[in-house]
Image (cartoon, rainbow, N blue to C red):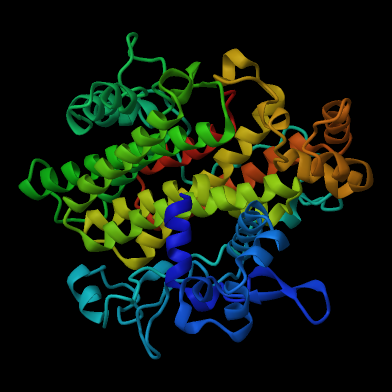
Length: 516
């Protein structure tokens, strides 16, 4: 991550200029002063200022003035601070020429009529150069936090709050619209297919590491919940009721389903790669009820296995032959990096704001779900931009709800039910949603413990007391339920009634109502 991160920084010298403090000796004043220079200036002798030329001519003075580790830490801190800003231009790839018409709802070109189907060839012809993105970034400006404020009484008592199933959706039936039952024919062998067919290398150790979460002796341990492939395939099936051209057993139907099934596999590969990297960064001991990959194979091999999975996923993605989907899913990989940058920044300060925390969760969790669902709609072909946007919003809100429930379960579940130790986030010094909600009313006593990452004796007990008094876990669940409702509304309003549409609604509900 660091290499690509710094590489991007050198490509955008103007965006990180004047970030890195460099100390020099001031011979006249006999003291040290600081001036800010760009990374580009440090690497380009022709662009050095007179001050930097004087600095370069006196290596002894420079070395004694500032240790190299201080310079490294200063660079890291400055880059992290800039990259973590909500409005940072560091990540901005939207270099569209003025007047470009490529921006619309969630990236759909404004050239298209309100009810016109998405035409990939037409959309690509609208793009004038390689720097113009097809998809407009999500502003991430609405999290519905007002609905869970301590003074808000829209839902009355917080206890027992659950997402409300929209009107017109059939009740959950284990044989008719249960999401995991309906998707089973499409996803039951996804892990085996990935492990046996899509992931393979001549290096035996790398081969074993890359397949670690896909092949297991009992067929279940390490497999995970596979929520992402389930979402992709249910949505793919639900979209068929919109496209009258998809007739049962037609060649086009077979081709579309094959592409969407491959998308589901790609989604699971990207997700699993992120687990390899996350566990190394977080120094986790277990994952999915077994030792984390880096505990089994070592840090270097776990990181290489994650990189290898991303490479294999990229190859499979390119073979879908859909540029729109390639850009959409590639954005997910950038978002995974952005999420880690935000988490690293928070780990340095120990304190995050709720909106920043939810934005980080979007990058780390919800973006993959949102863009996978959007890509499933794009692969369907004959659907409107409104349906593509609804698919994106469904995945986004389910992803936000999913991570919020994970936060809550960390305080309620056991190691056996979670597949990882309970209170793992607190013990790792992370301030998740329940803690941040508690900090709103218990800031003076809780924020110092957050800043020192709960390392002192009694910090964790203090946090648990504050969370209990502020209903932090319940408010976290309530916010998750609100996002689950937003996901339900997205598919109910955009998709035709069918068991698959209803199963998507029930999946959003089950994401909130779960114990692991």
